[in-house]
Image (cartoon, rainbow, N blue to C red; front, side, top):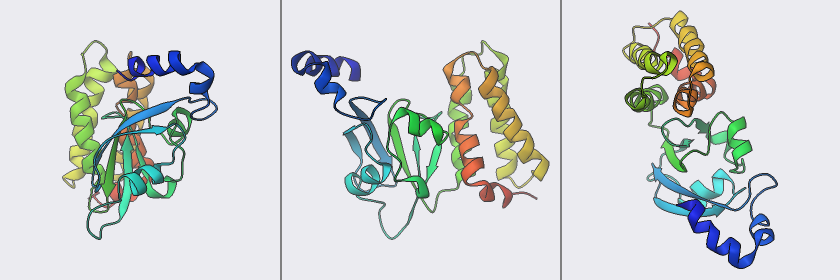
Length: 205
């Protein structure tokens, strides 16, 4: 739909006009579905290169109440989580990839301080587990195992060794799955392990 919507103004105004919007490598605009713990939810269209802070705090109006912003999750269920300290990052394909997430479907979910990041990772893994087509083993069984390992951690039954296994399996599923679903499904796990590892360690027995 976004592609079709862009065709008419590009034909009318010209390719140079469209290329003048955005960043050097990511041209034009992007539509985001802004939702989660944010005052102003809905669809927004911004030039590529707009910072996460502008989107969440200026357009989104910040989080309700007196809670603090903790992170945003971008790219749909197989996107990664970006912590607050990186909110000045410009939103484009390259910058998001460097932070361990994706542009994906254009979802942007605001997360506040009350959110448990391990539970969030399991929530997204539950979705990916149900979406796998089952053709390749890494995605078919790997997503199930990741979900079970996250459940074990949340139940307080895991050890430090399980954290290592979780990370190792995530990298394996990402590297060996045949399609984009399996290749991106571990992003919520890997990004929360990277940026919010302490929340995992607090749940170990």
